[in-house]
Length: 148
Image 1 (cartoon, rainbow, N blue to C red):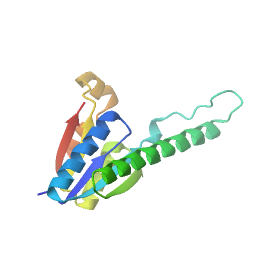
Image 2: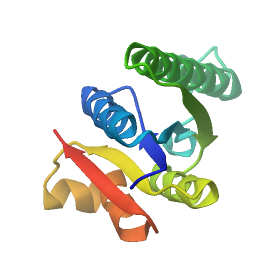
Image 3: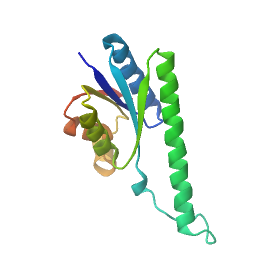
């Protein structure tokens, strides 16, 4: 039996499907649901949009945009939970997605962590990394990977 479920969302269609799976399991097992969106801002270059705009202004605009995207994604997750008849607790973090997801799962004592996988090949995973692979390798709880 799962009592605490953590679902990671990033605004993609596959993460929405993963959330739906998490909500289905939560409904069946009467579990609590936590949803996390991790903003990985450190990988974005802080380049000016033109020669007249300082890079710190461009960087702040980018960070603001990432923050708004995270808020919209979490609001969508909240709405999906309401439609499913469940309440969720939302979390927003900054950092490496895999590390933040597994750390939050440990902190919450999650029994199940649900993530989406875009199904990238080995070469893409080598160069880009894979959040779902990281979570599977480092999680202390059961992990459900919903494939694209």
